[in-house]
Image (cartoon, rainbow, N blue to C red; front, side, top):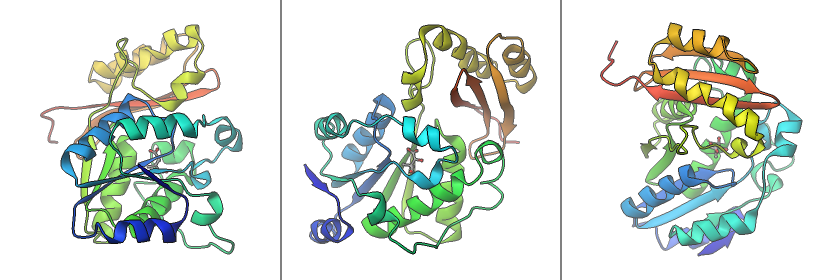
Amino acid sequence: MNVERGIGGLRELLAARRSTSIGLVPTMGALHEGHLSLLHAARDECDTVVMSLFVNPAQFADESDLDRYPHDEERDFELARDAGVDVVFAPSADEMYPPGFQTWVEVTELGSMLEGVHRPGHFRGVATIVLKLFAIVRPTALYFGQKDAQQVEVIRRLIRDFALDVELRVLPTVRDADGLALSSRNARLSRSERERALVLPRALATGDPEAARTLLESSNGLVVDYVERVDFDPPVLAGAVRVGSTRLIDNIVLEGDST
Ligand code: PAF
């Protein structure tokens, strides 16, 4: 497995592989089973697997959230190697945002609802970095998790609007045995916070926005940011709650619901 820090080096490395299929799995590190499922799918489906590892400052509205984001590069490299990744692209912030950087991608409507209300600028940061990664790696397939349903929808829109020649592959949310969707932020939960957080997947599992809201609002120690049915492709029941200082999002796909 190669680790590349520079855009030039990565391009050189990929030059010989241009005639093959290239899968890109964008990550911010702190890999868990959810990321591994994306890496395994990319390994099965593509000749070359590139994983990016970049904690993108532009998508963190809250500086303390960025500072607290878990980092363990060596562990992530190890997991990536075990998953059969060919190249990890792990650039510095200066490599991705060189001095004078001022070009941003805004997915206007989709980026300003739900998460966009609570994390202004978040999807501008996501869309910009994903487009830049796309331009650098030029993958044939891009891999994302359904856990971040709105992110998937934003990227789907970006691909359509800019006519990007790439297949979007979306893999199901991976959950712990207790039902909590895997997230790098789960590590911040104390035992009692985790217990409280479990109401989120249970509420969403009702499949009904009203029932889910009632359950969430009647639970102690949770602040509900939103719980809504959203007409994404596919439609989802999405929710976001705060447990202590940790914010968690989750969604379930509303199967067979085409309205
Ligand atoms: O989902 C994530 O980890 C990030 O939003 C992504 C797609 C890697 C962009 O920084």
